[in-house]
Amino acid sequence: MTAVYSAFFTYVIITSITPGPNNILSLSVATQYGLKRSTRVIMGMFCGYIVLMLLCGLFTYHMVNLLPVITPWLKWLVRLTLSG
Image (cartoon, rainbow, N blue to C red; front, side, top):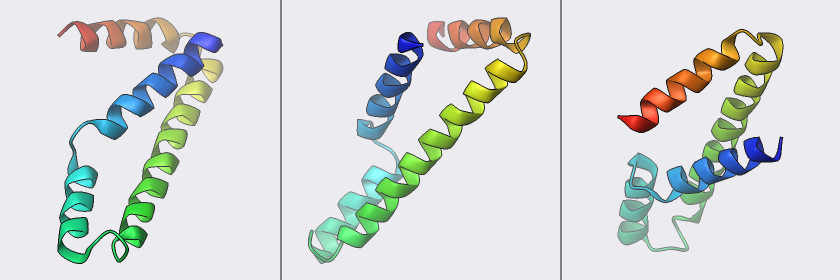
């Protein structure tokens, strides 16, 4: 189970620092209105990101526990995704 947590947190860290729509929007809002006025927008994006990551992790955890048949397929899909 420790491997699952470490993989999940690694994924969360990598996806949070790579450029995407939230990072570009927060940069744009901060440059237009200043950091103090854009704090609410940035905190909203942060909370939404945390909720989305927790829901994805929870969904995957329950799918693996409810349907053990799906685990080999998920491992194959991850290998395919990471290799290409």
